[in-house]
Amino acid sequence: GNSVTQMEGPVTLSEEAFLTINCTYTATGYPSLFWYVQYPGEGLQLLLKATKADDKGSNKGFEATYRKETTSFHLEKGSVQVSDSAVYFCALRHSGTASKLTFGTGTRLQVTL
Amino acid sequence: DGGITQSPKYLFRKEGQNVTLSCEQNLNHDAMYWYRQDPGQGLRLIYYSQIVNDFQKGDIAEGYSVSREKKESFPLTVTSAQKNPTAFYLCASSPREGLTDTQYFGPGTRLTVL
Image (cartoon, rainbow over all chains, first blue to last red; front, top):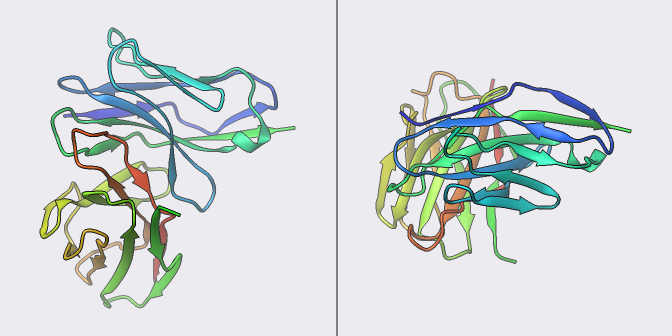
């Protein structure tokens, strides 16, 4: 079946450090891929998405490229800020179904001064 | 402002009682979803509805029930049959499939069963 695997956290970085959070997936067909962010005590917010191979999603300095050959969608940011501290979820949407999402387990990012 | 509201933010219930969580959206979205989030785990789909008066079970529907009588509302009832109901519950909505595939989430309800 479809599944998403994320690197385990927490990831602890100093402010202005480079961020990579790995995400790989298993899916049939051609899924869409997403990164969501969850700040403490809140719901999820869409951070970025990519709907086909080689697409790059970007938002607020974050980027991720849909790599079909490696079934990956790694999240990157060149310089993190304390305000980026949150839990990040990678997710895929099953192709051909009613927008059902499969989520990874989430990766907690802690950014310190 | 358009968005999804969930109430209440925190909910406490005694074991054996049914409880209903509210979810309302004014985004004019056709599809709505309920997810459960447990510590250290991703979100798991409980139920979803693509259109009024229709809904389908997700991956962990046992012990839960829903209704979709209005487009704007998708309440979730956690019944006494749910063995471990303490969790963070998230509601989401999206436009009908084919227009876009982004789901928008509400702020969540944290349910604690004592």
